[in-house]
Amino acid sequence: MKQPLKIIIGVVIAALLGGGGYFAYLKLQAQTDKNSESLASAGDVLVGDSYKPNSEKLTEEEMAPTINTKLKPSRKVVKSLQRENIKLSIEIIKLKDQIASLNNEVAELEDYKVTNERFAPKRLKDEMADIERQVKAFLLESDDAARFSSMHIEIMAAASALEYKEYITRNRLMVTKIQRSKIAIEFLPGYSFCVGDGIELAANSAREFDLVASKFRGTSTVALPSRLKKDLDSVITPCQNTLRAQLDKNLTEPS
Image (cartoon, rainbow, N blue to C red; front, side, top):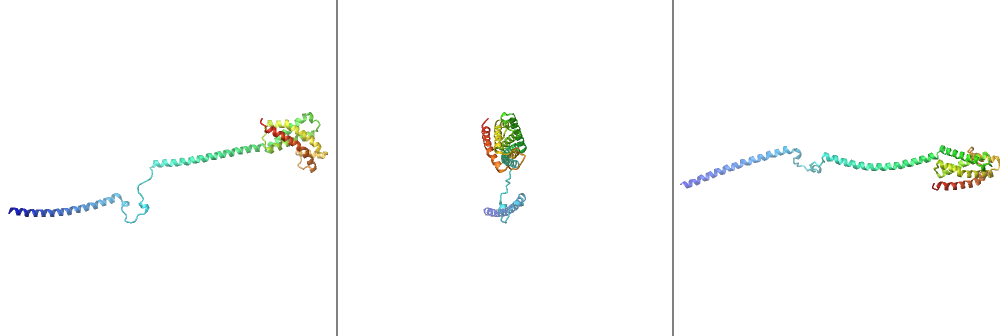
């Protein structure tokens, strides 16, 4: 009798325990679901609305990584300085080229200025006056010029100055004061004698002589009569050719 009772009591206890465990399980499951909801809400608070899932289709821009790829401020400064350094290096090269080009232009302008000053009317006029004075002084002291009148000598000296001007301007020569004196003493006297003798042959009258004198002395701009000009050219041209050949040889040879 005791044995069946124990079995019955055990079954009842097991049933009671089973029922209690089932209810305990239901209670535990309810608590778990509640905790999950709380955790989900906590997640919303922590991550914010911008990280919430969006049921709508995202654009490419919205799908791009949200990690900040910007450089650190110090690195940005270095990068900026490097770019500026490259730009400055390029600008320096350009400026150097411009300076070299400008230096060449300045040199050319200085040369142009010197050349133009050299052949400026006032400067050249002074040189011609110096040549004429030196040739005239030489002729007045020369015994070989005694056969010429003072007017002849003036014409001969003036003709020498004109030929000097013609020669240096045509050849763009830079003649120093020493070279000019050498030309006046060593070469132009022979030319002046040639001109003096040529005038005697070309001018057949006092009137023609006066016309030739006016031409060489620059006191008249009236053109010579064609016959007189032709006669004068025929005797003066050989004188000029001889002088120019002598000057070419003398002024082009190394000192």
